[in-house]
Image (tube, rainbow, N blue to C red; front, side, top):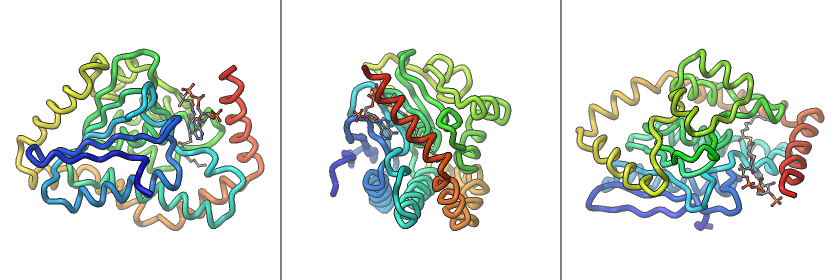
Length: 260
Ligand code: CO8
């Protein structure tokens, strides 16, 4: 199915707009991740496309991260397929030759934050109600090493270490101070700004920029490629533990209670 992500390529500028549209919260389900990877692959292979702006079509939420229901009470086969899809999405996005700009127009916890961190540039709506971060520790789970590596490459070791241990979700102004996002703009200016930043990055020749990007990211990408099966095994072992299942269920219940 091809309906959770809207993709529109402007052939004259070479820029694609990718909008997450999977209500209620753009959670990264197996189906969503598969569509995301296929969409990226299509753009990557399209010579007319040089850059992609990633944003959300939903109000107030960029992405709520990995779909927690995919990690609860499922079979080993399902966990394997799901985790492979998470890896695939990240390898494609972090390793993309295109210029990738995240226009973060809402909250962006955990896997949502990973998507933004994997882009070349992050612009966030300056609403302090929107927060971003790798909050895994708050769910009683541990961010995988390649989530951590991606985070460290953006904010540096010290900021990453504190933020990861506390599972912090940083309101937009704090995210800017930490370098977790590159700039804040009023929400109504977000798309205009993203287009301007994209134009600036695309003013350079692709080849040198792509080789430079690869130079900066290769070690971290190679680490997952080399340990992919081991990483899947680790995920399955971890997520199959009764204590972890309990933590995830409690977190889902907390989300539901918080509503009323
Ligand atoms: N997965 C599944 N369902 C979700 C998720 C999610 N990540 N997030 C929200 N939902 C559901 C809610 O339960 C709710 O369902 P229902 O309507 O049936 O009650 C519905 O979506 C709407 O959610 P809210 O009512 O909470 O909507 P709000 O607009 O009030 O808030 C937020 C939106 C801010 C996104 C809020 O829902 C939230 O904080 N969600 C949790 C986000 C989160 O912590 N995600 C972490 C996921 S884990 C991850 O991405 C990395 C894991 C790495 C693996 C580690 C190895 C095990």
